[in-house]
Image (cartoon, each protein chain N blue to C red):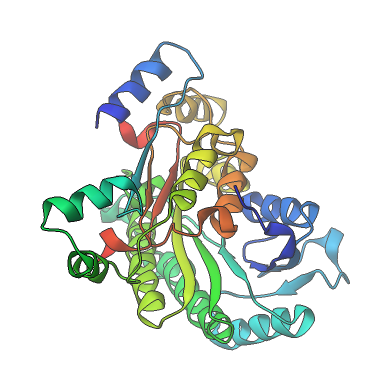
Length: 248
Length: 93
């Protein structure tokens, strides 16, 4: 088994909270060089050069972030696209503005990240991109139509770009990751949007076969696998991390 | 699909047993030797097989074992009923 995470220069989006924040912590613990990007810098990180402001919907900011990683560390080995939002609501009740907002962050943000990371990675001919999709990118989640649309798009866009990378003669790998509900601020946000409390949270837990939500570490473990050389023949794949939720 | 059924049986029995499947592309093993032999043998058959792969090369056993090592380790502790495709994009064509 080969793992080379300690040698990697990695850009992580959505780094201020949830899976992205945990990924940054674990990558740094492993010795990787990390550029932690988010639209808002956490107060605790104000003034820290570790954090870089990135609105994933703004192409010019992606260009700046990718250049920053390359300039700081002399290479661009991996991109972890964690930034994402969810707006709950049945399709009949979802405004077009909300639908577009979800697609903008989740799909356009991922697209722009891949576009500019690939350009940087192609200079050396290798790299790994991990796109955070969801179990909602594989199976329908009623009440989350916009989110499902966005995560399904991420899933198939990932496969197309994986084939493009191979056709370009590179060793850049592009995979998607599909977590089940995970203990993050996004789940708190879902509960809030649905006007729920402890009961709703319990319902969420019991909707999963094992009766518990994933932890951020459960998901980051899979990210570490996908960015490392341990997965060097895994390309265009969708790694489901859901303790059997979509096996039902 | 049997893997997924077993996963759900294991989860519903309250265990922490995980059951996953791994899906290699063509891999450089004796099985490939037998396949080429059955197809008439020779470098030409092997070249035809390679040409079906996006990157034009077979997996090696280590690349598949890396996937196995992930699935049996704690790194995949929330992967259950999952399909790990190790094919460098073959099934995405």
